[in-house]
Length: 138
Image 1 (spheres, helix red, strand yellow):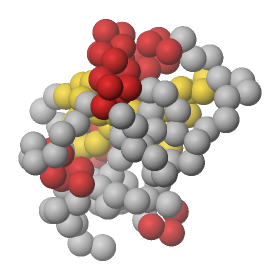
Image 2 (tube, one colour; image 1 turned 45 degrees about the vertical axis):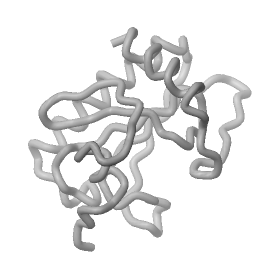
Image 3 (cartoon, one colour; image 1 turned 120 degrees about the horizontal axis):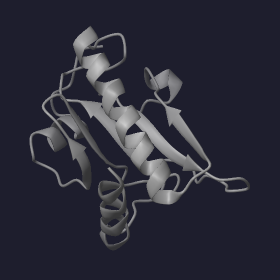
């Protein structure tokens, strides 16, 4: 599949759409999922154009994993979560809804049910303090 430069994450990277960023460097961006499955649901993307894990350069993949590891530690700390789930989907058949490589970071707790992803947009008033909590834990 060819990369669509107008996908939502490409537009976020260009500053055309708002985001609740928690971390950014030259190669990656981490921001809150606006349709979170759990409180603290964070996404990490490479700035490189890549639809799936198979399309990213080795350098882009390494940078994305480094950022995922760093931000995941902050999410775990910010929410004092005993568990953490990482998800990375490749292709629509696997459930990938945005055609830009991304990792999901989800804090997990015993007995906590996850909401279905992509069903409800969270209010900005709810997301802003969540983003600040994660940034403070970095």
